[in-house]
Amino acid sequence: MSEQTYNKVQMIGFALSTTPGNLNSIEGTSDDGRYLGIDDIEKDISARLDFVKQVIENAYEMHDNSSDVLKIFTIPEFFFRGSKGAYFGTPDSIFYKYFQNFISSVLSQEKYKNWIFVLGTLITSNVKVELDQEPTKTLFTIGDSLLDVYYRLHPLKERTATPESKAENFVSLSNLLKLADEKESASLYGKTEIRGLSMKEPSNDSSYISILSAALNYCDLTADIEVSNCCFIVEGGTKHPSIFSIQKKYKSKEDFILNGIEGNYTQSITRYPEIPEKSEVKEENRDPYSIFIYKGIRFGVEICLDHGRGRLAQSHKRWNDELVDIQLVISCGMDIRPNSVVAKKGGIVFNCDGEYVLDGRAENGEHCHTMMQIVDQPVCRDNPAVLSEHIRLDDKEKRSFSYTGALYPCNTYQIHVYRAMELPK
Image (cartoon, rainbow, N blue to C red; front, top):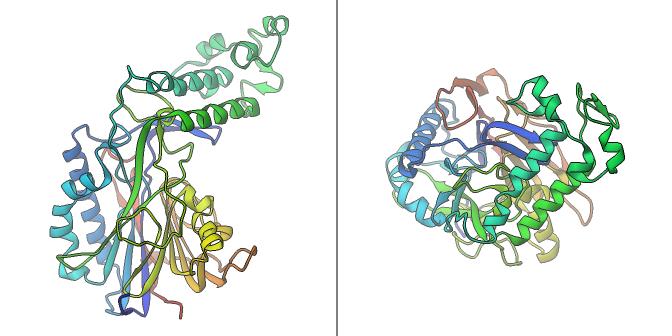
């Protein structure tokens, strides 16, 4: 174990939306949209890394330069995913092929000696999408079929049609979900309201959501295209950095888009690799687990739904894992959940998210947020951790910048630089 050399840490959040473009949430359960990126992998990753370099340089101007303060720069989930939803290759092969020059020329600079970089997540698959092979051939069309049903049930939510054509395309619930008999459905055409489903203000449909969830659960069990969602953490200021990787365990129904474009990695055809059940304390830097020690500081890292499902909390209960000093939640659609917090008293919990704003509970950007809380009372048996209020930023700690690229669905991004906080004793 390395001797601790820092008394404080400073959290720096890159507040950027990392969702697909033209995003349309399907009743808060899954997503319709399109992946943003450049088809050439090398050009795509290079453009994203150039963006990171620019953001880090801006953040450097705002940071606490005290040598006893560890700066922790964080990026949201799905920052590196490409135009198909995943890059073809293994996490290590993609990372070492395309990130090495960035690490050696940028992150290794002497000025970043007291920094570590949490590089969002990298989405990869070592399996290509083959639409003529089962089960992909069958599963690939399920997402589009589910969307077709949804837009027929809720015609005003369809983005491309006119109000007139939406009304013409409206069909009965019986044809789509078999929720009404044939006689009743025949009388429904042309009406503007069906069982309380108003065409002016479409409500959600619990039956549809149940079918959507059941269909995607089936796909998760059947899909054979394994996709990795990995977070890489890189030590700054050295030519031979420590590099840690964390693998996401739980796949959310919003992690990939539903709609199929040939060659895309979609929600219905993908699954995450299984991670053997054991303590989350890493034995090697590059194993898939979530707890590691750097410079005497004990970190726990969770990716989005892993935090929502209490990945580290479960491990703490089952394997008696020690509490951590710093818990990081790298996400695209998550916030800090007290039931999932495993930081010790005085520990720091930090969330960098690429999808949601949280009124009054976080520092918000454009469809994104960061939030930091301190543990007042750690988890004890079945009692969740007690957390402080969100640590707020003042104007000099939060800066906005224009974004004019085509890799992310936003016009601005922000850098959130929190004040340095004492590490727990």
